Image (cartoon, rainbow, N blue to C red; front, side, top):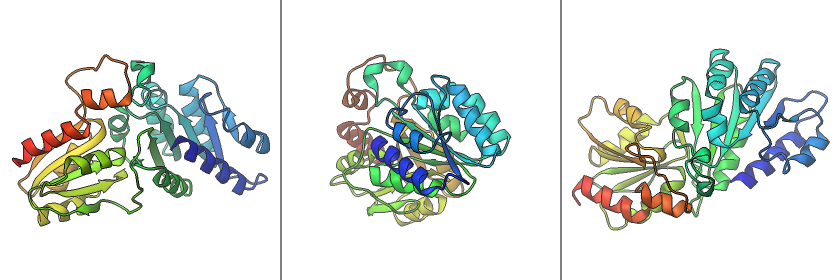
Length: 298
């Protein structure tokens, strides 16, 4: 996804005329080498502020105030957690738009340790009104979502991951990939393939989504009314991040909800690889199957 994002960003810059540009890119060392060619072709429009992430976000907001559409990029622990005050004040409070693009997801960089892990990024962004949040599960989805995010003046968070599904799904809102009667399982972004393996042989509806904000309440309601009001929400970040929106969508319907994602009860103090962290958080296919079957009584 990261390589696709960088290639697409170069295409966007090259297609945007320099005499009267619309788009600028702000970096904090991360990916600066890969965009060096674009920086030479478009002086002043690929800005590397160094490892100053608060400045990264503030500079992006300043460009937006000046009439440009900023693409602001670094790892999520630095982009969202470290610079959250600047996101809150310089983008949201000032009511300016931009495209914030992270790479590294919750624990993609597991060997780098806790400093590079950010399972709470979507929950933080969700505390601010008016943000669109994309969580693509495939490089083709990431490309399309970036291209759709650059026009306009909205506030967008695009969360890229090293994990990906085998095939893209380019629908809008919830896409129903399987039909079943005993419950609805919602898969967000790169957890889809694991969810499908976990649900093999189970009588469940599986929904997929790559744009989790705004939340497709109508799509969830339709699936629940066609199946059972038992919902399993599987997100590749902090468990329960979208639980509020599920409850709002089904507020007039008696329902049950099981939220699966990165653990809230304990910090996983290990390095290892991505698969080790999937297992520790119960996000591998085997653990997901056990959780889903236990909740639905299958």
